[in-house]
Image (tube, rainbow, N blue to C red):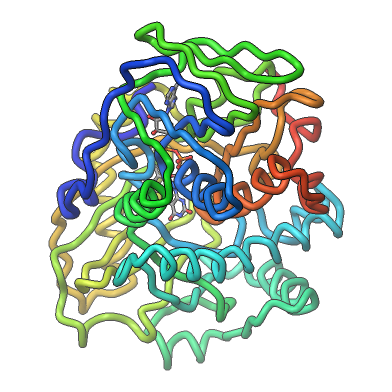
Length: 405
Ligand SMILES: Cc1cc2nc3c(=O)[nH]c(=O)nc-3n(C[C@H](O)[C@H](O)[C@H](O)COP(=O)(O)OP(=O)(O)OC[C@H]3O[C@@H](n4cnc5c(N)ncnc54)[C@H](O)[C@@H]3O)c2cc1C
């Protein structure tokens, strides 16, 4: 599957730190991680830290797929609002999911420091705007529910919005917990940290078959090499669904643009992450070199080609959406790109074995905050593999709601 358009910002802006070898032999490992995007990297980090012997294989270079196209806002705020998630999965799982995402931002902060990835992670605040006046009542309920489970939030009215951000929105939730990153560089830094501690990484090795016995898993690659392991972590992004016998995600095309650096004084208060209650929602962030990233204008996914022919039109629409909010900021598009992302029926990721007692473990962090889900997945899969009890694993299992196949 073609997961992104040809020229996302990050690979053109960030160097490739290490070139890993192609797989040229059969191998045996304690754990094999399939996929070298941010999900595979975070899972590998937790496993290596826990003392596991890990081999990572991937059909592409590290971070070359969705991770190179991401806009990398790190939010505890799941695409499905807490009030709707409560209806879908019940109050305990819904609030725990929000709190896990909240904690995973702090965990990602620690990971980036541990691997020495300086200047790729910045803590931010987050502003969720009421896109329309009629959204205000639902947003107020959302604010109360989040506050009641202990999340640090503030309610802002139209006057606050005007005075502090110069925006016309009738209300907003202002959250203390959020961050932004460069997932392309962070992934590469994590892999360097892991390989310095013994992990082997191979690329240009596509898994074409998975066989499993009670004791081990055997993977076969497109070049007919065989890899055996006690456990396999499938961190294969949106292509991961092809190994499943159920329909866990709906695909969408999504669009993003990034500006040339703008004068710092023009940027909005706090440089907070901004998004809104629109469907699809519009979202904004800044970068450490003072660019602005805007994303949204999603479409139902049809094909990579149909997604990409819309890039020009979608960029102009995103630019117009932005200029309506911030007419004083001089926005020159530097890069424009498109990607594919998946949405699950309840907005939560699928983490763990797809079949009972299977040694093939998935970390499928679908949704607008896939990266915080990747961190949750890394911890749960580490615990499953090292035989630790993880009380949160039951929230993200495959036997909950799916789309109809
Ligand atoms: C435009 C856009 C904006 C986004 N914005 C955000 C955001 O603001 N915040 C956020 O948290 N998330 C965001 N996301 C989602 C986020 O980017 C993804 O959740 C994340 O990048 C997924 O990482 P991954 O490692 O799971 O998948 P990928 O980066 O796609 O990596 C998959 C890996 O699996 C390998 N692979 C696949 N199949 C095989 C196989 N058969 N054999 C061997 N290897 C295989 C690939 O080669 C690759 O290495 C966005 C996504 C897009 C497209």
